[in-house]
Length: 167
Image (cartoon, rainbow, N blue to C red; front, side, top):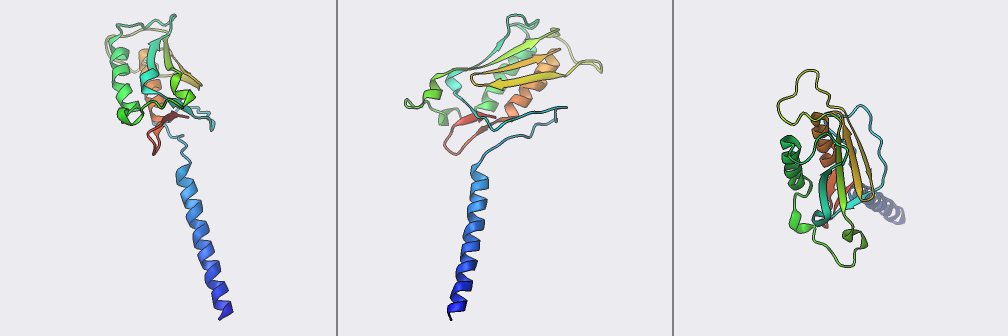
């Protein structure tokens, strides 16, 4: 009888252990899937929390594309609700220090082609760097900037508590 109890205890322990491993794997959110897949991606476990009330897209001062570039202006409007899918859930909490700081996505385009369509020779390359408080997106053309904005949006996630983060 004692041997059977030990056997049942081990089985229960193994089941509990598997449950905990499964639970922990779901509680750690890490996004590293971007489509279309960039030629090179380097990421870390760092998380940058985004506050929708303190989040902006802006053009860099040296960018060829500036406000009035219809392709990027409309992309900025389109990506905000994609990034903050549940704007109401991400309410500022007074005790959270990070929620007071802004996050800016600065876009720099080398050659502005704000009107028209891409062709077979249009460059869609971009470089996206993210750090605390800012993301820098550099692209040769607006088409590359659009790809970079798409990649940025895919690396954002919302946790079970409504906190929106980028990693």
